[in-house]
Image (tube, rainbow, N blue to C red; front, top):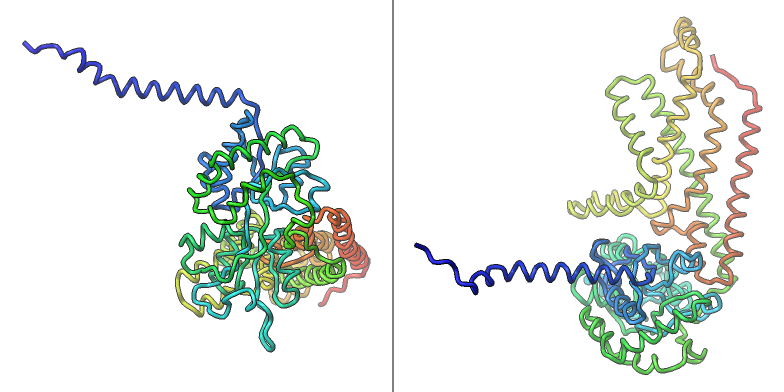
Length: 521
C-alpha cells in the first residue's frame, strides 16, 4: 500500500499557490490604496516619444513617467496621465483639464506671468544632429550660409526653445522649419530630401542618436544653450507647487533622480548642478537665466512672417481648388456616363477620400509614400514621390476636395432634365459633345453656391498643411503662441485675414449666380 505524502510535501506543493495568492491580494490592496488617493492629473504628449513618455497606454514608461510616480507618492497623490498635444499643454492646464503640465516643458521667463513653475528637474542642452554620411556640417559654425549655396533646412520642434534659439542666433543663415513631433523630424533628416539637420534637446539626442537607435544620424558640435525642464502649474495652486518642490528636492537629495536618469542613460555633468539649483530660490533672477530662453522674436520679423504666411495660404487654395474642380468634373462625368470598369474605381476613389481624414491623407503623401519608396530602394521612384512640401500640400488638398466636388457636380448633372440629352442626340450631336456643350454648362451654373462654400472651406483647411512643414497662417500662429503676450493679438489678426480672404468669394458667387446662362448649341 502506498504511503501518504508527508505533510512537508503537501506544504511544498501548495507553496506556489499560496505565494500567488499573497501577491494577488497584495496587488489588489495596493491598487485599492492608490484608488483612495486623490488623483494628480499630469498632462503630457506620448506622441513625443522616448525617453520622456512612451510605450502602450496600459504600460507607459520613460524617465518622466518614473519621476512623476515618485513625486506623486511623496505628496500623497495618485498620478493619472492625460494626453494632449505638446504645444497645447499650457492651454490645457489653464482650462483646468489637468493639474500640472510635465513633458519637457522648458522654462521661459515670460510664461511665469501667467503660470508658475516648480523647481527644475532636468537640465537640458541643445544638440546639433546630422546624417552620418554628411561631413559638410561638423559644428554650429557650419550652419552659416555660404556664398552661392542654398540655406540649410533645420528642423526644430514647434514652439520650443530650439526654434527661438535658431531664429535669433542664425537669423537668415538657415531656413528654420518647425515640426510637430521629434520622431518625424528625425525621419525627415534621415531621408535628406526635406531636412538637412535638426536641433533637438539633449534627452532625445542621447536616447535616439547617441544611444544607437538611429545609426543613420550623428551628433556633432558641442552642447549649447543650457536650459531647465520644469513642471508647470496654475498660479493659484500654491500648495500643490510647494509640495512638488519638496518632492523634487527629496528626489535629488536621496539620489532617486540620479537613479532614474542613469537607467535611461541621461545622467551627465549638467545634472550635477541640480543639487545646487534645488536649494536656491525659484524662479531664478534674470541674470541667472540662460540667454537662449530669454530670446524673443521681434514684431518686425513677425509682420514679415505674416505676409509670407498669407501668401502661402492664398497660393495653396488658389492652386488646389481649380485642380480639385477639374478632377471632380471628370470623376462625376465618368461615374454617370462611363462604362462599369470606369465607374467602379472612381466610386472607390471617392469613398476612400471622403471616408478618411484629410490629415491622414497628408501624412500618407508626405511621410509614408516616400518611406515605402525608400524601402523599395529604386532611386527614380524615390525622386518621383518625394515632392516638395508645398507640392504635396496642393495635391493633398486637391485630391481630397475632388471627391467632394465630384459629388456636387454629379448632383448638378443629374438635376438637368433627361430630355435635354435626348433632344441633343436627336439633333445629331454626339453623346460627348452633348455632355460638354449642353448638360455640363447648366450643371456648373447650378452648383456655384456649394462649390464656393467648398472654396471657403478649403481656405481654412490649408491649416492642415502645417503638419507637413508648410508655414501658413494657422501654422504661424502655432509657432508663436508660446509668447503669451502676443498670442491673443496674433489669433485675432489671423482670424481677420482668413475672413478678408473668404468674404470676397461669397460676393463673387452671388455675382456669378446673377449672370445669364449661355448654352452652346
